[in-house]
Image 1 (cartoon, each protein chain N blue to C red):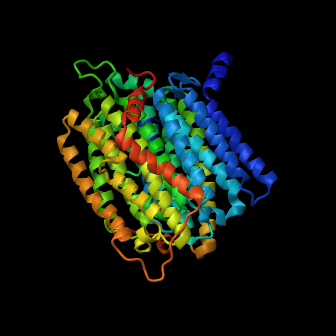
Image 2: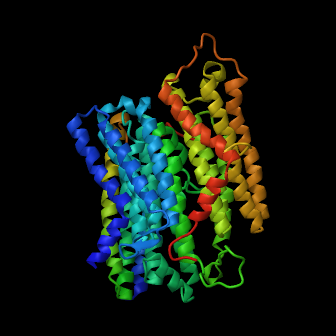
Image 3: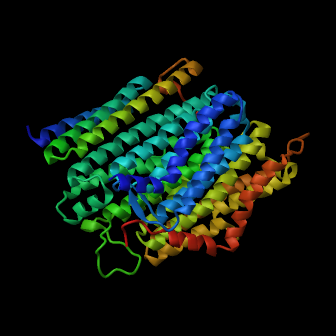
Length: 99
Length: 498
């Protein structure tokens, strides 16, 4: 398959992730959408890496995965801390601080 | 190869020190017992040592670890700045009621501050897309946790959640930009990217998209509009010490990385016919127009919204957004003079902004509130602290004879030098707006009577010493500014650039 196919797929995945972050109100689903964004980055990197014949891109993927895992771990810990205080993970209810 | 790595390690001493002390802070904390302050002292020693080692590297200019990180005067300057603010923050923490109320978590506090400082040190020196992303992530991940440090307080954990959501999204955008930039140039090293762009065979539209996405990552770190949404919430919800650290060190590291990225990736090193110190961008891309728009939006929104704030932490959050806008003006110029002006502004900003946050923290310690009404008549209840606050605020507004004036003066001089007159006018108008909300606090302190039976607020001697240590440079650098100007001029040199 051609490079464009992969890039298109990753762009679509990325946009789905962004829309998910903007539209969904459940904090856990927002984090899932962020994972989707990061995985589309991985797809782009691997596609370019294969196209350019340069393994650097594939090496970057490992680091992106590590970053994604660390972010998810901290994100879930923060959600738990907040849930203990407020008994909700709905972003619309988390609104003490505004303007 | 081995020799190279050993040589690199010798130049990597500040970062190694921080890593060792990160482990030491955890072990010492566990041995000394959970409520002991030992971890905070270990963190203080570690950061002081690392800063000292960074100062020892002054003058060296080398790429280490096969060009992942560089040690050059520019990086050393920012390491000094970040180290100094970390030391001040740790001293604040020893007197912060918020931090001391959660004494059983001092281990986390000390070690995460070390990790955050390590991330910022790496941000100051990274010259590789991978290193850049990892350094930003190390800083961000530590600061997410620290923002929610007082997790029993609902607003603190809310701030933390908002911070990580905005942070993770901008990391996602930045990484996507990085992946496109890698695909376009086939390189992750800044200098190789520059070489690939210099051939002129790169698709201009794709490059623009990639760069805007990467700028989103920087914009989030320096809280530039429209990536600033997290700033007021996190600044209000997080403990004051962490807020102050984010507003100075995190912003400095973000600016360092952004300036290095723009200069090393997009500047045509062989451009001819330019005045000394001016830069030309590759492929005729006018990145400075993009930055000028960001700068105007950032300072205008920051200042206009700050006018309506009644919580001092939130007011200072919007003020710090506005200051990011002022400093972006220096980057817009794309000249060594503009860069030096940003560095001067950062030295000044370190003292005045940390000072303002420290006074807010001291008052909140005593009164339990950061509301502007708490400051009514404070001038009569605690004259010294109030006078210090006035000096910090007029310095933030940029009025002589304080250091803030010198910072603004050099920024505007650099702008006028490069014929960016409209931007200088916008900046000056913004300074006028900012005067309004700073003076509002001053008016509350001195021209309003204190509430009845309000007692004098007394602060302990070490607390006053810290205030004076920030107050004296704020005034002194307004009068004798040649040392900071010389330091900044000597620090604009980046490795591998003319």
